[in-house]
Length: 73
Image (cartoon, rainbow, N blue to C red; front, side):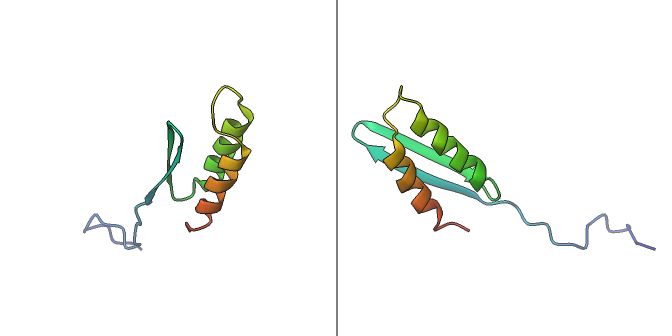
């Protein structure tokens, strides 16, 4: 039977880490923020930005940021 007298969980709870990346291109600056475990969602966002012709972010920019993401766990 588990004891709950202390009110704490015996398992270690890790707080997710927030990460930041910034890309500057000419007068434009994109700042990307994500939490541990959200890297795939960020990659999808990069692809959406690259497809959208209304902004200056292109496929090369997406590739550069994606390459930088490889440095994060």
